[in-house]
Image (cartoon, rainbow, N blue to C red; front, side, top):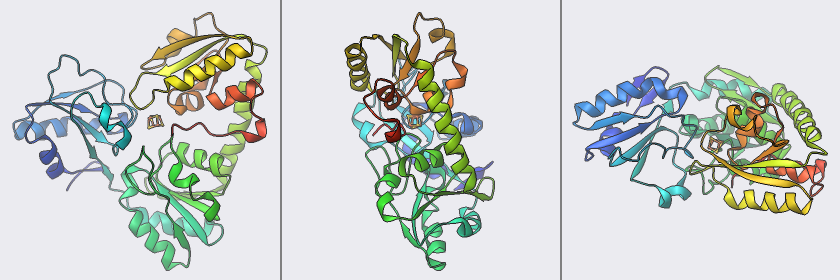
Length: 335
Ligand code: SF4
């Protein structure tokens, strides 16, 4: 495996995947886009044409755009691990070239040890670091902790792997652990885990070589205040839009129609809106009061401040309509 920047490209695997193809479409998320020409050059050297897609690409849920008329015989998604349950829906053969981070998780886990609470520790991670789980677990065991790893879900490829929208590997073991260790970067995943399990979450972030715990608890408090305000700002309003994400792994059509039915039972007017890449340019100008997003959970949670109107998750809409108590707030997941 050769090193490239802060990531590892497995060129042997790439050769295996693309070797028999005439032309492939390369899809990469923003953080890995700088690898696109290097990968394209390699493919060229083995006689494979490649088209680099410059469309947005957010995760393993999102890789099919733009293949019409390109005459590609394979999509190569670079970065994430596959979502196995989508396999039957691929428009053409699709392969996932996972990129493992070159940052060493072990040293960061050592730093996280003093922050852990209790003995039984749930260990979760994300694709770039999941291959370092084994050594993280050994460090925990060597320090007299009892690591617990949850099983993969239909949307994940590895035991212990979580997504921003699927925390099953954590929630399924929540009752068996005292606290969680999240090995990875970014704060969205540990925030979701903290909200979904209500257990202490310690972050070991190898990319920053730092560990933290209190920050996640503070974020959780801030998050709840923001979401409470978002629900309050939608109260008494009658006209709503329900967003369906068009991306393969973000589409929740049934849920959108359940939300519409609930809205109508409560005397509201609800419009179903589909979008491949939601943007304020469009929905800010519709004659609607607020929106419920059934698309990627990150849209309502990370991007709400980009929109002039409140953007709720389906669970928040249940709270708004009195179908669920605020005390039973849950983090939105696609399961
Ligand atoms: S739906 Fe959103 S959170 Fe889930 S994998 Fe896709 S981009 Fe990530």
